[in-house]
Length: 253
Image (cartoon, rainbow, N blue to C red):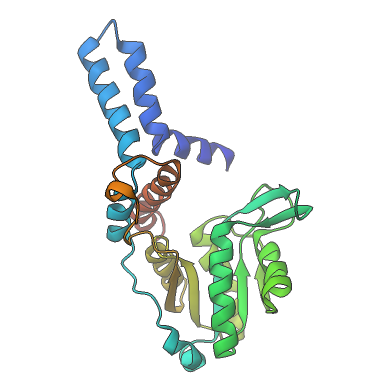
């Protein structure tokens, strides 16, 4: 697993663009024209992914699933049997809480799922394994926070998965023997197409409940054409998701 993340970090931006800049430095004397091309591509790529307008533009091409109308929450129990919240890592050893806590992305998902659960009466499953190879699992951290912060008791915890595909297949192994084949999947809007694909492949009928849309008006000065650190992080998430959308159908059939 660490090796896979190392390779992914190198081959996906911003790692790829940094490698191009390093390559330009190495070739500046032996291949000056190629060095210039690598430098322009590397620097230009870093500039592009650091702009909010790039995030907005890219997200609109990935966030293809429409939001679930709040007016439909009360009738969800007629169309689904459970709500599944996908894991999104954890913040490790937070001094304020004295331990590991959910990420901000996870909190977005949990808040949305808690509201839907209270409106519909549907039970919740949290999913996510050992992000750092040691307990607690992402699923357990989310379950604890849902209970303590949102007053919602989690019925199931899938605590072994490491990828979206494993989120789906391991959730299926827990729920389908109980006759549960219709689920509401809660994850980020940019992650939802791959999540829906995975859960449908695992045998579920899926109602998508996306949150955290990035393909909306960025509301930044100058229309989002100035670089920001946050935009680079969001661009990395979108580019990783675009790669996942290409790879998953090739790997999981």
